Image (cartoon, rainbow, N blue to C red; front, side, top):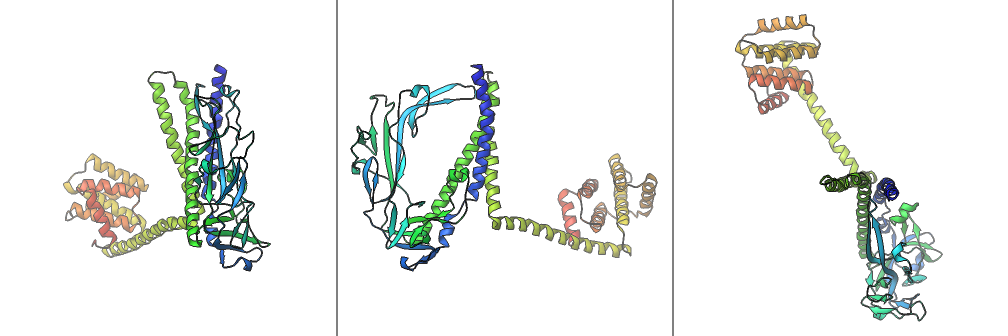
Amino acid sequence: MAEEKKNSKLGGIILGPLFICVSIVGLWKNENRFNYHKAAKATEPVAAASSLSDGQIFSFTGGMDQSLTFPGEYVRFFTGYLDVERRAEIYAWKKSTDSDNNVKWSKMWMTSLESNSRNNGISQRFQSGFFGPEQYSVDDLTIQADRIEFVDSREYLAPSSLELVPSDLTQGLAKQDRYLYLSKSGGDRLGDERIAYRGIPVPVTATYFGKSENGVAVAHQAAQKSGIMSEIIQDTGVVHHLVAGQREEALHTMKSHFQKVKNIVRGIGLGVNILGWATLFSVFSGFFYHVPIIGPMVSRMAMLMAVAFGVVFGGGTIVLGFLTHHIWVVLPLIAIPVAGILYLRANARKSQTTVHHQVSQSIGHQPSSAELKELEFYELVQLSMDDGQISPAELELLREYASDQGWPDAHASKLFDQAMSASTGLLTKRDHMKNLVRFALADGIIDQRERKVLNKASAIAGVGTHDLGRLIQEAQSGAVG
């Protein structure tokens, strides 16, 4: 048992990342899947099949024979359908295990008999499959059935309308509801089999999209698709579609079908991604399984984390894949913020030029960057001395400012003395804040360090954050005199 649990945990460590990787690859490919609706829309409509030339990518609309008939193996023939899907199921035991190798048994309908100990002695007689004619005709256009694709909805065939082929294989089949039913076991239904048929009715009018070759409509490989993942998500890259209705109606059906398939794969991909994370996390949460209180809590947390990680990684793959393969969406997303940044930079330069000109006029010459820093220091000193004394917090602000400029102590002391001697006492605290803002803007854009100085200075001046922002806006617009 211990060895089985060890193998189960090892399997979880392997399967979890495998599910995650497979789902991400599938989701990525799905975002770049071939758009057969757009390809069909680009085909050239033709009025007569006789006018087609070899290699021509075209669409053609016409009538179809409602009595189209083809054989169905267990059923003698199907009439009035483009193709028919046979779904065969058997009622048998399903075995599942958790990360601690705890086994759970359940009986259910399945398309393929699971190999396990409880299904020993049970055999499956019928298999699923598809049936259709060798070729189709739309008016005088002959269409090759090989690789044909349909997007119209299927409907269930009533068993009462089906004539079974007499044989040992079909012996015992009974027509029951919408199934052909084979009872083997009596009461518990174990081993019983059932068959359901679904078909696409032959439309009165249909439109074909594809390629002409030697007078026959054949599959057009519009995009090269290869690999097992393309097969799994049914991304063929082919235009060879027979759709009910006139051309516009058929195109609308194709568009809806394409989006439906894409969304289904997205949903399955997200589900597999979450399953991968759940499988991986369950291995680690299993260590706490038998711990009271903590065990159930960890299990719930593991599931929540699996959902969160699945949504982030799976959803992120969808978004990134969509943006990567739809550059027309990405360009505005890039262009808008870039244009905004350029506008703000240009506006900042304009404001700096305006404020710098005002400062130059007020002091009588063009100040250098170093001089502007000294003028800011003067204003800080005079603001701090407005009430006749410098508090420890104000003194610390002055020291920090001098240190940020890299001034020696002697130079800072000299500037302090000059500021003190130049003070007239005529300016209010708000006036000093205006000057600080002007000098900071004249030296360039207010960065994070200067913003910190202004915030501390505004606290000393009794100017609120809102008022400080207004002072900056006024200075930038040239309203400060």
